[in-house]
Image (cartoon, rainbow, N blue to C red; front, side):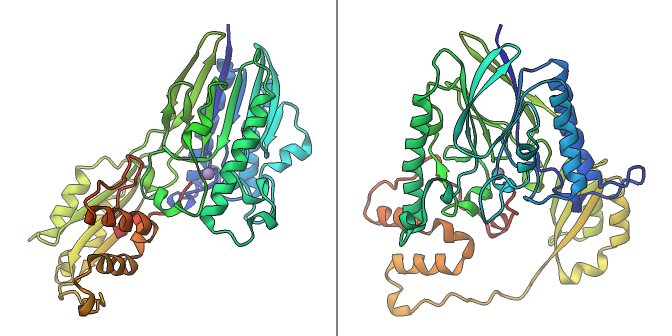
Length: 428
Ligand SMILES: [Mn+2]
């Protein structure tokens, strides 16, 4: 006997519509239908098992003011849970908030309507839910904004880093207060929409570095919690086993940075003696990048067509990125490439013309300073925008190297992105 939970996150219903087209049968964008179907499949599962609670850990839509028809598709699925008397938590993520102001803009309608069995998690607090299989305590930690925990005068004159430090101190205190008030005879879980500091992802981390608050894993993985349900990072991952600290991940691929990721939700069983959890994949639409460099090819057209033929693209969302020289352009038959891609659901062609002329040097280093490697490095970082977020780390590491000390890189230190990956869209 135990409590069974379905943990789903980052639904982002309505995003990626540029990759879809209008379904003539429904009049709806096919990408919205994909996301909606994934959500429906998860809700079907919640009803069939059935589960005792559904935790949604934030980011319902791409922004806080979704179109009414998108709102409706979302509501239809959650109301099926309400009808089956399965309690639901809707936690507020960053995409659910207005950039100005407080509260969960796109989810507050559920609070206003007082939909029975639906909790809107828009502050750091604790709820005790009655389920078919007994009570459970849920500590809710929505996306943290400055105004949630700090007043204006407290942050006056502070740098971004100092404000984040202060936010973490305050968060630690408030969370400790919630934990102190937990009933130790009732299982407790934490539901949080945060960037945790051990999370793995690509260029996104870098883009948000410094701007947003990163919460240390130790603050989340507290032994009083039987499970920590995380939202925000789209790649499903388990950050800690005891207690389980888990990003459910997004339910569909929001953009090409997620093309290799499996999507789904997490099922959790909390028994008196243990917590078991399992990732359950959802069917998703294929997304595929075909990247070809034909600059050295005598027959670039055939090379492109061969690559397309050797790639699984049926009903997928495809982008063909190919590098070629200007003089190769007459050898490319674009209509033929388009027809080779016709079995895809949608596709884009992204030719990259390689400039044959020698690159102009733009670096302006004063020759009198050239002997100082730190100056040169600093100059280099300044002129390469994609390295800006790493500036402090890079300079510190270089300084350490020069001083003959092992630099303090950790496994969490992100890889240096190429300018290309640094331009990936930020999709959390
Ligand atoms: Mn988010």
